[in-house]
Length: 50
Image (cartoon, rainbow, N blue to C red; front, top):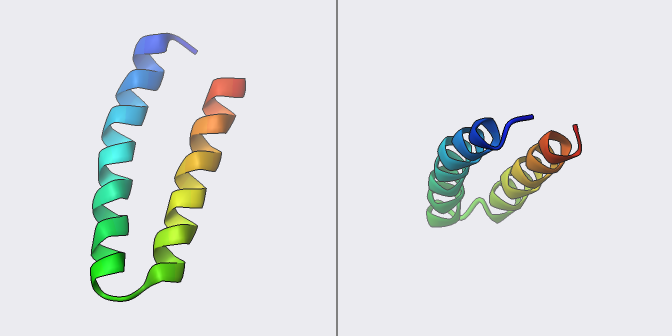
């Protein structure tokens, strides 16, 4: 995978996931914030390994 693709994906996806995690933390959904962070980490690692 080209580095520019990974950078674009990580830039947009990370910002979106951080926003969602912050929203979940604000509403007290700590488990949801952790699950979302785990999903983002898993997705990025799979992209890197491809």
